[in-house]
Image (cartoon, rainbow, N blue to C red):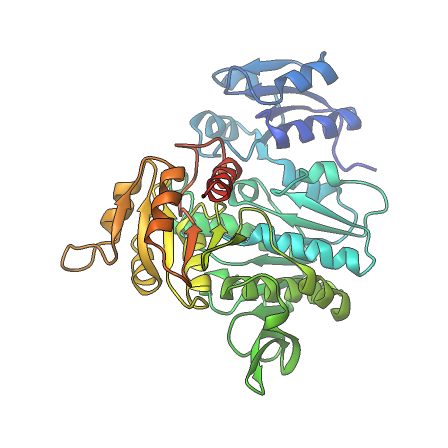
Length: 453
């Protein structure tokens, strides 16, 4: 039985993928509602008209009086709650909510909830595969793949959700069985007033959580929680009580739980310290949720990584190629540079640039100086990155090359590379200044690599 009252009028604000999932859910519940979208032709308008031709849709500038007819607004993650008309509606008593808040009220199975600036898609996928390998009827989605409300179904034994800060802004109390914020680094600074506001949005994931998983090496991942709440941890150091980490046994590194070696690092198909951290985070979440260790380790042995996330594309003349187009912020790019750079015999040729979303690029400087042979800069904020990569003397810490296209970056990168090097697309920026999305950027890079003579 649904917990949503059917005698009140609601408005879905935003008709994208998540908005359409809210529409379908409300229609199933027999709730009275309408739709508003700031765009003249929202992405799912044609689908809506085909499936629900009777539902009122208002496109264009949001009308405050119209919004105030509703008891509750289900606001798209793409629309900031700070939008003045939404704040005006809230001041007049209208509740601002979202699809994840609605999902949390309806879910009848435990939830593993995952957020973070980076790696959340990989960790979410891993945990979902671990649960399936353990025989659980698991539903995986949220910010990744299927919208959360479309996952609701009888017979589901476990939900695994990837959640963005935008989704969490409208989530009052998730009540997850296990919740984690994998890491925090500057991202979406074009939407938030600063890192503190971004951090607060991310940490809404812990509201009502029964257990938490923290990153020992990122203090910002640790929530303020009661001492009696079970807390598990992961990190690339030696683990202690309730901890997952790395231990050395007879000269070989192992993923470990507390003092017990679990799996030799060499058995992982994904390279780099950041991928070891992802594996440890997934193990911590799965263990907290009661998944047995054997099937979780078997999943790690077979996992080859997600497309556009430090994805190995091949090798040519001793040079490897990695597609990390999903690295849309500085923290993600740093993880790839440090993770791959430490394992290479040679150096990295880094392709970076795009829409920086107001980020500070100076944290890249030390890792670029340590691991990169050169940086090839593309996109709108190329000059901002170039400035951030200057040393105290005003000179760049490695050679910088501005290029007009991603294809040109690949050609010049190959010319500069030496045997043992790797050409890495890890932009530290969003893609929308040059591409439809990060997937299109990664596909362009893959084609350019494939077309090398």
